[in-house]
Length: 167
Image (cartoon, rainbow, N blue to C red):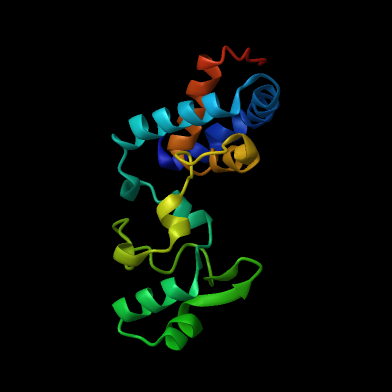
């Protein structure tokens, strides 16, 4: 599997190919079969992968919090919800998101200060185990430049679907 610090570069080399593969899937893949394949590969690859050795997602994306998640995280950090929001969050189109990148809760050792109550968007990333992957292929192409597992899933799916690479 590609190393976390090399995934962006590796993905850029196959970015055009990934967009062509996305179009190929839209035309040739059965959505339910595609979901099954994503789920199988997700389980297989994440069973062997330690996300704390990477945390590219924490460095590249800004997590958003619901009001309920704000309350839980604030309590964990012995703050009020208002103090938590003022200290860590900004209003944006997603709602309330971390003020900056990398995530303010990311520790040097790859752990998360709010791991026990991190928001659903963090828990679910990269969403390769969810249904309707056909509808999210564009965002997954983007995620392939951040997450080594998503990159690997795309590379394996190309082989499984017999996608002809044009280099």
